[in-house]
Image (cartoon, rainbow, N blue to C red):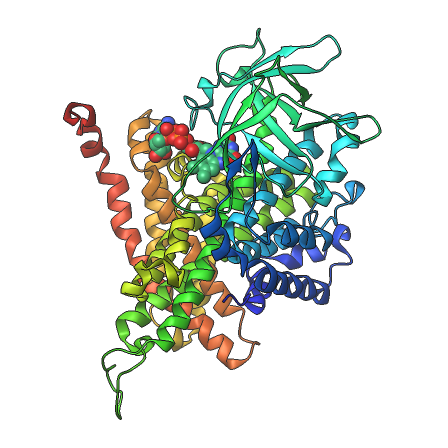
Length: 593
Ligand SMILES: Cc1cc2nc3c(=O)[nH]c(=O)nc-3n(C[C@H](O)[C@H](O)[C@H](O)COP(=O)(O)OP(=O)(O)OC[C@H]3O[C@@H](n4cnc5c(N)ncnc54)[C@H](O)[C@@H]3O)c2cc1C
C-alpha cells in the first residue's frame, strides 16, 4: 500500500524550496496555492490508486519479447492511457505544443509520486519528457510540427539512445553511423544497448533520439550528432506509414525495474533507418545534454520516490510485527518492533533521508524554473549555475539514499525482508539501478568537482555555503531547546564542506587533478548532507505557524538527521583530504589475475 504524502510535498514546495518565487512571476500568475494543492492531491490519488497496485505485478511479469514485439505487464496499457488522458505527461511542457506550462517544481512533485507508485512505470514518460525538452530547444519547426504535440500528449513515447557496448560513460567511443541522403534525411546504422522503453505496446509509435556520427565528423564527442528516428515513419498528414529500419533484438534480464523494458536496438540492418537531424551536425551532444540534465534530476527523483515507498512499507510492518519487549513497555505479550530503539533509529533515518532527497530534488527543480523565468543575464547566469551545482547532488545523493533507505526497509522486515512476497526486496532491487544510469554517481561527483565548483571562479559554491550557514545561524537564534544540537552539528558539517571545497579548488588550481578526482565521491556526499541538514532545519523553522504536531515532527526530523547522519561529514572530509595518496598508490591492475 502507498499513501501519497501530499501535505509534506506541498509544504516542501511552498515553504522549503521557494515555489512562492515562481508564483510571484507573471508567467505563473494563475498558480495559486489552491491550484498547487489540487494538482498535488490529484497526482497523489492517481499514483496511489492506479499506479501503485501495478508495481508488484510488473515485477513478476516483466516485459517479454516475442515475435519482435515487447509486451508490457497486465494493466499497464490501461493505466498509461488513463494517465495521459489526465494530461499528466505534458505538465511542464510548452502550452503551444499542448502542454500545461507548469513549473518543473510541480513536475518534480508529481514525478515523485509516479515513482513511488512504480519506478518502472514512471521511467517511460520521464524519457518522453526529456525528448520533448530536447525538441523544444533544438528541433526544426518542421519536426516540431510533426512530432511535438503527440509526444507532449503521450500519444507517442520517446527514448534516449546513447549507450553502445564499448561506449558507456565515455561517449568518445561511440560508433553508430549516420549517412546523408539527398533529400536532407539521414540513414542511421548501428547497435544501441540498454535502451529503456526501446520497444513496448503502450503507444502506436516510438520516437527514438539517437546519437550517431557522420562520415566526416571530427573524432571524439565533437563529432556526434543527434537524430530523431521514429519506429514508424510519419506522413505529412500525420498518418503512420511504413515500419522504419529499427528493431529490438533483445530485452535484458535485470536485478530490478522488471516492468521497464531495457532493449538492445539495431538500426539499419536493411539499408539504414531513416533519421532526421536535431540541431546542427556534430552538435548532438549539446542537444542530448538538454535531455540528460532533465533526466538526471528525474533519476534523483526515482531515488526519492522509491525511498518514500520503502519507508511507508517498513513503517507499516514495524507497527504490526511484534517481537521482544521494548524498554518501558508494561503488561503482557510482545511489543511491536516499532517501539524498539534500534528500529526507531532506522525508521527515523529512512524518513529523514527521504525528506532530504525530496527537498534537494525540489530545490534543483526550483533553480531550473528560476533560470527559465530570469529577466536579466545576471539572474539567468546565477540560477543556471545553481541548477548546475544542484543537479549532480540531486541525482547522486537521492539515488544513494534510495538504496540506503530501501536496504534499511529490508532490515526492518527481518527475514521476511529477504522473502520476495513482502515486496520490501523489490524496492531495493529497483532502487539499485538509479546510482548507475544517467551518468553513474561517480561521474556525477566528477561533474560536481571539476565543472561545477569552479563556476564563476568559485563564487557560486561559496555563495551556496553562505546560504547554508545563514540557516544554521537561524536555528541557533531560534533558541528552541527541541532543536538539540542541530545548529552545532550543522555548523560543523558546513565547516567540513568549506574545508573540502578549499581542498578541491586548490587541488585543481595546482594541477593535482588525481587528488581532486580521488575525493570527488565523498565530496559530493559532504555537500549533499550539509545541504540536506540545512533544508530539514529550514522546514522546521518554517513550521512555526503549522499545527504543533507538524512543528514537533519536522523539528525532530531535522534534529535526528543533524545529530546522527551529519556526523559522517567529519570522516568524509578526512577521506577527501587524506586518502588521495593511498588511492593513487593502490595498483589494482597489478593485483588482478
Ligand atoms: C536498466 C538500464 C537502463 C538504461 N537505460 C538507458 C537508456 O535508456 N539509454 C541509454 O543510452 N543508456 C541507458 N543505460 C546505460 C547507462 O546509462 C550506462 O550503463 C551507464 O551510463 C554506465 O555506463 P557503463 O554501463 O558502460 O559503465 P562504464 O562506463 O563501463 O562504467 C563502469 C564503472 O567505471 C566508472 N567509470 C567510468 N568512467 C570513469 C571515469 N572517467 N572516471 C571514474 N570512473 C569512471 C563508472 O562510474 C562505473 O562505476 C541503461 C542501463 C541500464 C542498466
